[in-house]
Image 1: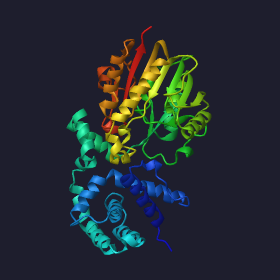
Image 2: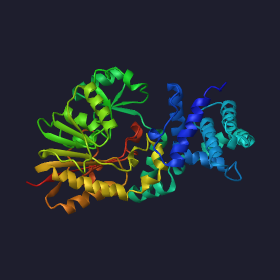
Image 3: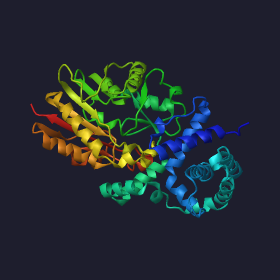
Image 4: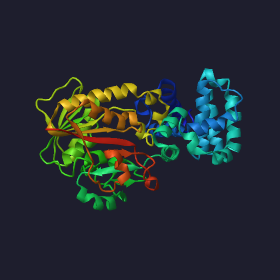
Length: 426
């Protein structure tokens, strides 16, 4: 007979091995099909907690280990330490569960004694050590932190680390902005200065009032700002949304009155986009295709390119990004962004506008790409963003929109985003 929570802990170990051992994203890692919904949720919570606090956890364990144990045992110790010091699990429950996990496999069974001994020391000495840690200094892996310091400075890098440790609230974009105050009151949400709604403890999203009626969709407050650079109303304009799934920007564009064509290479993700459109009562033409191979029948008034990138700006909600080597190797992604930008430019009518967006914190996937694009295209001119409600002037410095997780620290932060608007000269 299994112990309470054993299935969730075992599944969390599998997730951690997928992320830290195989370099996969947490939401791509497979879980057992027979795992119950509560155990699935608990496993994802535990895995994300370990990934979010990995620097602190490893610093604690280093003081109690004379040498590193095998990888699987080390993962069990990390999970146990997270439960003890970051999740409030009672010491006897966390330690005995870790020992039981070690006993499940032949390769780790012989080290049950080590797990028990380290667990007892972490339970006794760990809380004081944890409280004394400089958590932001331990939060980001060294190469990732160094890149942020080079780009934005030490203070901003520490602020980004603090935002990652805090996690992310749930933000909603309202289909009809005029209904935002009433919907905020109905949901008990904060109406942000930019117009998004923010819930600190949302619960099940599909159970929220207004969800079934399509009154809103989930979208970080930062992610909602780039489309607003095009103006409040886009009535009758033909707009191509590239890399569109799962559809937040498509719905924004359609709600603003645009005639939208949404394109993405993933049929599975486009099915989600279609479901979101159906729920919100918004319309768009959907195309499943590779943007580098597809061609439209006629040019567009606006092209929105939310390009594939490192996604480093989403580290508050996706701490697994910090532990993927590919996150720092942005050269292939930057080359793809250049190709997509050049391709999108071909589909824009004279006088039309191109909105380039990435959810990256690295200038190599933002500012540098936008400047390089303008230098390649003599008929491209940067367009200064208009004033945006709730947006501080320094977020628009240099004629582009630059957002970081350390902004709005007193409100719960935001994702990191870059957006630049270019016009094709007639």
